[in-house]
Length: 144
Image 1 (cartoon, rainbow, N blue to C red):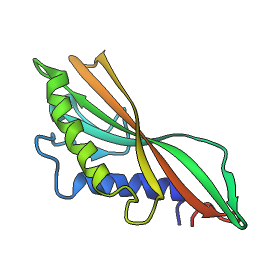
Image 2 (image 1 turned 180 degrees about the horizontal axis):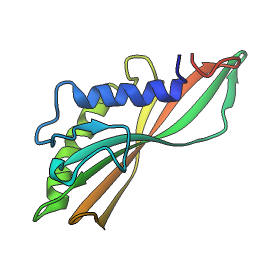
Image 3 (image 1 turned 180 degrees about the vertical axis):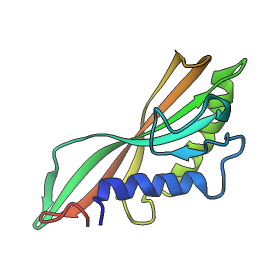
């Protein structure tokens, strides 16, 4: 079984793939922010894990964790940020409808948003939104 952190990432991916996001390219939603799409597949979405704070012991036998989950939207075209923004709004709305990810997390809260430009085969816009996922595990397991 995978760690609770990976289970949370997979739950976010599931929220963003079923039903498919409107306007998403053939690359769809992946867990690889750098290589899982072709430039012709844009816009594309990636969900990946960031840093995790040291766990707090809140209850006897339990640890509280906070994990950064990043949703990255890569888009191209004449107004790449606008194209990506429409997809990012859909992603945000879906995550906010299930803040516990079906009981996987205690809470999901929005953190910062970053907007940058990059040059791949052509200019693209990259918008990243971070979420803090709070979750609890047993002191003897990272899975549950």
